[in-house]
Every structure is written in structure tokens, then in C-alpha cells.
Length: 127
Image (cartoon, rainbow, N blue to C red; front, top):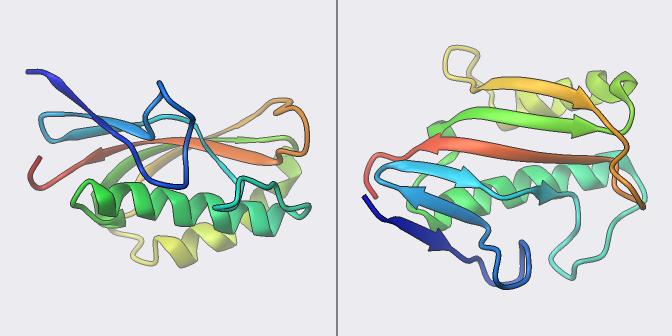
């Protein structure tokens, strides 16, 4: 089954790296950061996290799905002490505890002004 690269106007990596790849009904994202659509990085973790979740949603919607299709999120933080704020946002972006995706939160130096980034896996209803 061939992969299908998904490019999203105004976000994601520059060519040749797509925002995600779809294989069958599986979507695998590239790295999603907290940069805004103008590719600038806000100073606050909250703004970066909002941008990251919004980009996650955009990628899924461009692929024909919704956040309900996300099954796994791998999340990196500069400071694991920021998990409380991220957990509050998580509950807002994924409000139904019965259908929330699995998540792994890891700590690493993200470099530069980045405070948060993630990758997602989603199972789309149709490809």
C-alpha cells in the first residue's frame, strides 16, 4: 500500500518533508511545534501549546478526520514541570475521557525558543 504525503499550506516543514504521511487509514505526523502560522515562535508555553494543538487539529482535518481519530500522541517538553498546564489543555482539546488518545510525555532540550512539540498517530475512518 503506497504512502500519501500530506502537505498543509502555511504550516509544517518546508519541502521535502510533509506535515504527515497517510498509509491506508493510518496517519503519521511529522514534528508539530508551537510556531504560529507565520512561523514565529511565541514566548509562552501556553501560546506554543495552543498553536501545537491547533496544528494537530488542522493536519487531521486536512486528512479528512477529526481529533477523535488521534490514537497516540508523543509529546516533548523542555520542562516536565509544565505537565500540569499541558494536562489542563489536554482535557480541553480531548474532553471525553473515554476516547482520549494515549500519550507519552518526554523531557528533552528542544533548542531555541521551543518549549513543546509532538508527533501524532491517527486512524482515519477513510483514506
